[in-house]
Image 1 (cartoon, chains in turn green, cyan):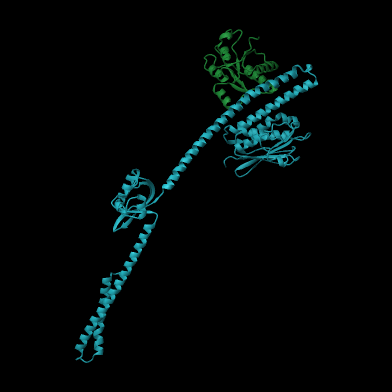
Image 2: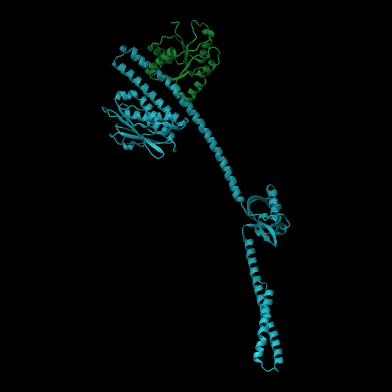
Length: 149
Length: 446
């Protein structure tokens, strides 16, 4: 693991989508380590470093969170709302990555402080292009805020 | 005109004066003998008395006859008037400061009281308490101030206690030499009842509409939830099918024989098609329920954006596009308009006979308060028999092998244009290419 590269936290409950994302990330030659949690509660536990996620050397605080909206237990929007109220870490860049194109969802996500909103494409090549752009923009070009973790 | 006695006196005066003036001269001319003069004077005097008595008798009789005639005429008129007030279906009340002085039979019939009883009552005694103060004020006011005509509706209570709606016209009349109040009335109870029934019916109808609307809104919400879950849940397995088939083809191609690879490719293509279908369905349903705010839109930008969406196809087919510059500003909705033009472009690029290079022309014609944007192609054209139904959802005119299309593209165009207050149409014949136009309002003249 390259310690200098920021960790990506993927909050996604569909194992297929996780596998496809991994594949796209590998194909895009994105070297950042990837951590995956499968529901909203786990995402909050990870971000607050509780339970099994207490060891930050194994589960480093992420530089970017990729957040699905439709999740078991706590929804993606609830996770986002919670995050933005946490002192010290509330500035963590969050890219919503979901299936819904509904303008109500898009609006709600931005209202709650999402930094970007992406719709999961069906075609793998489109996903690949999206992950490439994502890595280029959020992990290379973007200047990230300092977080007190 | 002078009065009869004065007229008689005047005629008598004139007659006497003429008599005095001429009778002596006449006498002196006729009687020359002075001795007969005295006797002639006596005869002349008697003649005068006789003649004047006759004259007065004649004059008096004539005047009397005239008076009698006038009286008879008056009586006839009064009889006629009474006949009218007796038979008219409108109630007539005449009152002085509210105290009833005259009532016609219809007034008696409406009130249920006898004529004798009514003539001892005040007008407001028969009025419903709700209107009593108003009638009292108006009746008393009319006693001092002649006032004009007034019309109002009120309820009375008949002797038997039944409520009755009347429409009243109030005015002032000279009655028995004093200024009195005149109130005519007719029964509008039936009309009031019908109005009340109508009001009730309207309320019921409104309630029913509200219920139906609520039902429809609930159904709509269900549909929204449905399309949401379609957009989310249905596409997730599709991503897996598509993604893993591609992974299979990329990573394990050497383990698959030719037909195995063909199968995988077919699964891949089918998944793509299903995704397109779901996307289009969602676009169509979004167009149906989403709120569209119309504002001035620059068509140049919209057309450029729509063309940019098809860059790959345009490149692949080497299509030739001819787009007029300075397209007008229309009243529309940006995203919807881009989708409409993009779908029309997509068809123009797609439905071309094999081996033919697509040629597409886009231009606008501006009218008084609207404009038409034309998109013409050199494609396979549309049989006039089908031109009516191509704008409906799920109309397919081509086999899937030759021209892949979900069949919703033109339905989206149609719905989108209608939601922007416009119209879409096509002129085409088989093998001659198609010419679509959309009509939209232009700025400033809507």
